Image 1 (cartoon, rainbow, N blue to C red):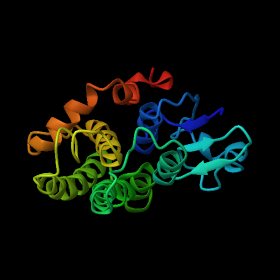
Image 2: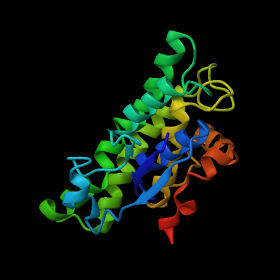
Image 3: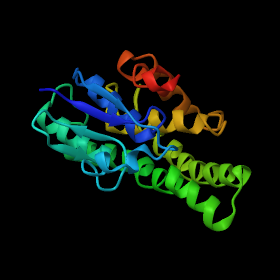
Image 4: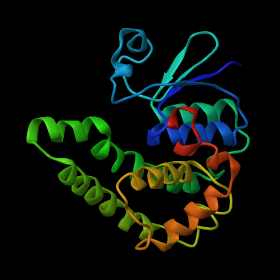
Length: 214
């Protein structure tokens, strides 16, 4: 199967999907877009993804999958090994809950569209945007750190195998670095991020490692 990943190197949703593809051992063609230049708003891309967002995964028959968590679930169903979710229903619920703390609570409030809206409608300068971003990261990371005190946490967010929650956490920590958010207040998150960054599947997905990062 030929896969084409439409993405942006610094997008956290793109980062989490790149790491998932790497973990599954799937090769893909890398198609970069410059979000600030409006490249995803051009007609050619909007025919693939009407929202004009990244990432999108294009299959060899022209089918385009959108929304990173939905794409990762598709990968899990079509390429089940290595598994990104535990075998037991309670474990799967825990991992999905951790993943959604980041994907549904931090990302929607802090993505580029929201920051631009704060700037354009409310006159938020860069300092105010940074304060907004940090507030919503801290609100969830404080709770995430507490959730990780569960005995089911191992080397990674759930046990000793990286999974869906780790994909989201790894990408968010990289996104936080844009705003100079240290991990000192969240030692478990810091430990897990370091363990993930030691894995080639994750480090190769990191924003600085992408061809459009230069």
